[in-house]
Structures are given as structure tokens and as C-alpha cells.
Length: 429
Image 1 (tube, rainbow, N blue to C red):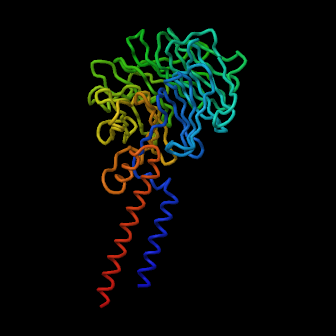
Image 2 (image 1 turned 90 degrees about the vertical axis):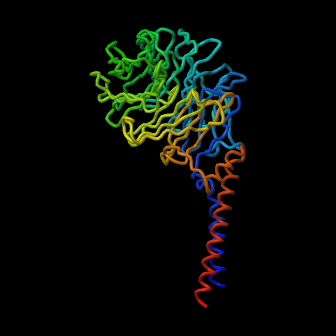
Image 3 (image 1 turned 90 degrees about the horizontal axis):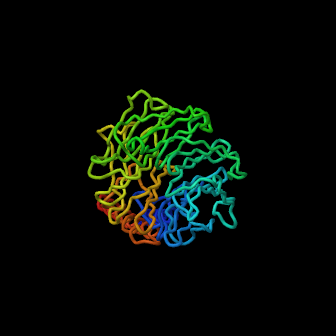
């Protein structure tokens, strides 16, 4: 009996430890929560604790909002939402500076101008500096793409009607009206920007003057000055809404939505930094219906992870490739949140474990999914299914799921210990 009591005490201690550490223990499955109601157009980053920071457009008052969650799943209770600009804000692009403070580029109405917000604290509380760094240029329904250079100064790609502009600010707030602004291309749409190892911009965009061909511009200086940038169009078929990343060699990897009639998710992996030579690898890793709208991409171990909207089924999908080219064979495609008509304007980042964290539109709300695996594959049955049921309960979903998971684990442990003890007693007769 002494041994049995000891084992039961160990089981109880394990149960209490499980509950105390439930925030990390829940990572067994995907967790989907409503991050903001009546919201859209999100961009996401993770703070030093792994909690999401999301810039989005409030659909009711049309203003730019910054949500800083106080837990990894944005459960209601202690999250902070701020409204740093009294004017409206659309198509934000968010990064965090070295201090963890949000920096956001966006398009504002009714004045149709590019704006840059650089918060001076992680919650954007109080009066934050907001600049209009290109006041003479009108943006109409135009998206922005923002990165920070090595000094913490913003670099922004944006597309007023008729051309792409690349702005390289000479201070962290883009103040003073003396930023470097260069003009490239014509009738471009949805530019996506990254910086190479030298700090030179690489911009992917769709060029409507060429029938919507996907173009890759690789600048040969940090300001894209001189009018001598490399501009290539490796795919002869049209596409739109590109997203871009760079592999370890600095070669662009571009995810985009293939134009009609195929309407597939496409991926182009260039074999050189400029995508030159017309010999790049182009694949269609998902072609099941009308898929691939508004993708987001990130590389892990050189292999792409892509989120995008499945127009046929009206949901968010995630592609996890098992090779750098997403060649046919072992790629995983997972449908997420199939119960709502969503998946548009997804924003993607990986947490410290390499698991995807995605914000996306569901009309009318903005949702967040934190995956419990690198490919977001659902775990059905057993403890993970109980956790998922808890997650579906809403607001306090995370804690309910972990308690269900913990209680089930404790009961299973006690039963197992009882069986072992009973068998031991019988064996000792």
C-alpha cells in the first residue's frame, strides 16, 4: 500500500505541475482564436515572450489598431489594443524594432497617403509619432511592405497608380521630409519587399503593363538609386499578389497566385540572386481548385511554408514543403478553420519552435491560429482532440483545453498506476 500511495502522490504532483505549466503543454494541437472582432488587413510579429503583436484595420471605425497580446493565443483578458492614428488605416505592414516597439507602414484615407508609425513603447500607448513621409503622392487602395535596415531605419515599397516607389528613410521615424525615394516600373500591384545581406532591396510585384507578369527587382544599392536595377520576369504566365523570401544563398523564393485559367498556388525558386537566365524552378504545389490567393511565405531550414486562401472552399490553407522547391512528393497541405469563410490577407510568422503563427481575415473578424506542429497537421482523437474541443469553446478556450487535457492525463495515469499495483499484488500472492 505504501508503494501505491507513493505512486498516487507522484501522479497528483505530475497533474499539478501539468496545470501550472499548461501554457506550454497545450502545444499539442492547433489553437484558433478570434483576435479582434470586425477587423481585417492584418500584419503580425511576435514579441520577445512569443506573444503576438498585430496591426490591423478596424472595420467599424476604419482606423489602424495595434493589438499586443499578453499570452501566446490572444485570449481575452489582458490584451492591449491601441489606436495610434485618428485617421483611417489600411494594408499595414508591421515589424518590431530592437526594443520591441511596433513600426508600421500603411495607407490612410481620406487623404490617400503613405504613413509611417513608430511607437515609442511596446503597446503604442500615449501619443505616438506618425509621419507622412511622401506627402505629394496619392495612394489609392495600395498596399505597403516594410522592413528595417541594419540601423533600424524603415525601407518601404509601395505602389501608387502607375509605378513602384521604394523609400529608404534616414532615421527611424522617417521624419524630416528628406528620405530617399526612387521610382520604378509601371502599373505595379502589391509589392513585397525583403533586404539582401548587403541591405539592398529585393521587390516582387505584379506588372499589369505586361499582362500581370510576376517581376523581381533586385536593387544594387540600399536606395535603389541610379535606374540600373535588375528587373526580371522568369514566369511567362501571369500571376498576382506575390510574397517573397530569400534562401540562405540570397536567392529569391516567390509565392504567388497564378492567373486564370489555372488559378493555382505557384512557387518560383530562383537559382541566382537576380532570377536571371530564364531557368528558375517554378512549381504549382497546390492546384486543387481555385487556390493561392494572397499568400504569405517564410522559410524554415530552406523549405517554404506558405499560407493562402482557398477560394473554392473559402478557407485558410497552409503549405509546408519538404524541399526548397516545393517539388511534388512529400509536401503537406493543411486546411485550417474550414468552418468560416476566411483565409484572406493572411500574415505568417514562425514561433521559437518553428511552428506557424497566422493571422487572417474571416469576414467580419480577424482570427489567429497557433499551430502545434510545423505543418499544422491536425491531431484527431485522444488528448489533442480534447484540447481542440476546449479551444473551440472561445474566450477562455486555452485554459479550458489544458484543464481537459490535464484531467484526462491524470485519470489515465491513476488508472495505469492502479492496474500496475493490482497486478503487483496478485503476482506477490
